[in-house]
Image 1 (tube, rainbow, N blue to C red):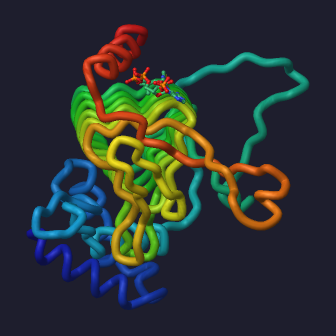
Image 2 (spheres, helix red, strand yellow):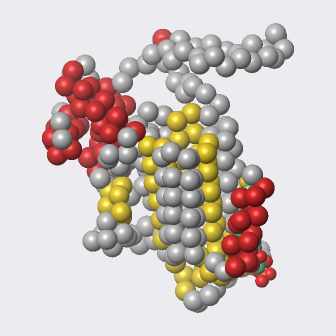
Length: 282
Ligand SMILES: CC(C)(COP(=O)(O)OP(=O)(O)OC[C@H]1O[C@@H](n2cnc3c(N)ncnc32)[C@H](O)[C@@H]1OP(=O)(O)O)[C@@H](O)C(=O)NCCC(=O)NCCS
């Protein structure tokens, strides 16, 4: 099948609801999509200069990924030669498909349907979910998560415990996008379709969601998601976790403040040095 034929097949099997389960041609279409995803021939979202955000969501690809969950049945997945030693009184619990619990294999694992380019480095434990795209030269450090359909550019550093949220449904929702040369600091979280433009730096502990306003001290503006567009972090912005005073009601009376990510500067030589040192430390 060429891509157009595959798109039509996926859309029609997705529309057929539960009748796709057990349908051989639905399985064939899904397996073809999964292989195409793994080879980087199709992706859940792709750069598109005609779109206001610069990215186009391929809803049919996300439909195909959802189809794969719908038509899949639970099965045992055998080990891959790893060995472990621990107190005999606390052996590893074992599960069978009939237990109805899904235990995804591996301290690190890359799920079928994810595209991982050559030269990507994966430090254990980390997880790359289906539909994700991880481009050349990117580092996925320990405890990092690349959620379903997330798009990670070239030479990105996802530091230890960085969480990149997945967005599978609704199918037309934009996934989280991290463009080229971004540094996502340790313990950061990027969720709900947020776009981080190329060269940006998220300091350790920065959390970004649709509902998080970001305060740009350099330009004197506040960045927010709108009903039409996700939160977008500009190119080369250096975002650090900050706080803002609550100025109304009880919050003000009690002297509370809320978490507020702040753009303190745009990438300069010092930032390049800080992030290069991080690279050398690896
Ligand atoms: C953001 C980062 C790269 C520093 O960039 P930088 O360009 O060198 O930043 P600067 O030191 O010039 O700091 C600019 C301003 O932001 C503040 N700042 C810097 N990092 C900050 C942080 N993490 N939290 C809060 N404020 C921070 C500085 O105090 C400075 O403000 P000031 O001038 O009022 O003092 C660095 O703080 C960082 O978070 N690195 C990632 C660390 C990490 O997660 N490593 C993972 C290894 S697996």
